[in-house]
Length: 489
Image 1 (spheres, rainbow, N blue to C red):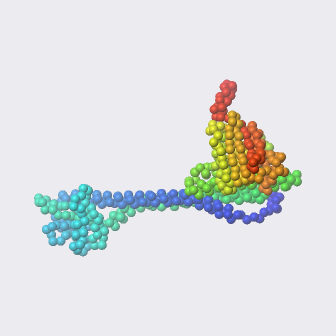
Image 2: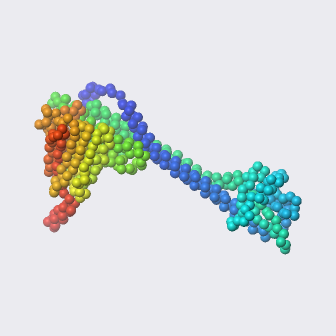
Image 3: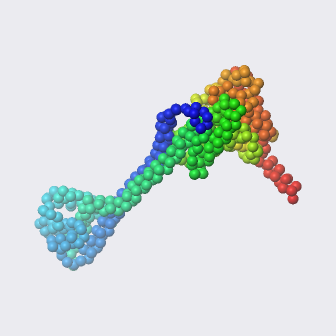
């Protein structure tokens, strides 16, 4: 026996549930990591291209400086002078003088005829570029070569001077320029991956703990509490679950004194079952969003978070049916938004249950408002979920007349059992094994609060529920508020 007085259920944690949370973690983490890696690769490629371009421009500027100095200098370019200049400029120099039998150069070893021909024959006959450049292989080294003509002062005699820059040195200079952006990109990937993994692991851990906690409540353990100090959507849902467990425990003790253990068990399992359905819909929406490779702020994720918020209010309303506290102040909402939120929230559940659900929302005008948005959402979602559990084809249609909205929910299921047809809207009347019997009772109570009705009929092999409630337009609401303000003044 556990602290609630119920027999202990030694059911192990479902391994499939653990696997699903792991898949959710991967789907949340993968887009962020892939995005960071792609961004870093783009930065690295751009940095490499920029680095090589910078190194090339630097080489050109160095050549122009060498050309300008040597073109104006009067001293002869002998072998020792070339050696000194090559050491100062970190280049290799080759002087070709038509009057000399062999070129003067700073390369190690002698130049072969083939190398000399490659050096002098690689240039175009005419070029419009500010400098003449080409690539040449000499002494098993790749060089970026430039040349210019140098004339002896006071005569027309000229020689060709080739300035050779080592390609390996140029590439090294480009890589050195790109090193810092590449290092920053790699660091960003590592930091983003670590932070994403940390935040995702915490989120998935909280969801797994909440799911396990709900499972314990479903097994009858009403005394367990889940501690979470963060007041976000999941934290508020945990508070609602704890509140539900406390009220269920108090209700259990009260009914136990009245020898109503069987009714209490149905209340506990029914409430936990209803909450579990809602959580399943939220999780399916999250998994569907990330299966499509979208960001954490996509529409399905927002729908799932809104469904969790509605679940809190829905559970609170179910619990307050038993204790009958002071009614909550209704909150007006647009009919169109409520129905579209409901559609977005229940479509993933219908897909999971393999139910074909058709929505006809074309008759809704955007300015039509309902007096109690959360109550309307809870009532219609209850009717639609019941329809999805009854049949595999569901139709939801909305029509609006002056001051009244009518919602029809139709399913092709077997219909309501004959023994409960006359008492279908009474509390604790149900034929479901895990049913609570408060859903349709709650729908009827909410319809009455909103000035409407709820009814059902069986026709042409289908079960139809009709829900009506008062509505008003935004313009009418403003006019009423203006009139009330004027009367007050």
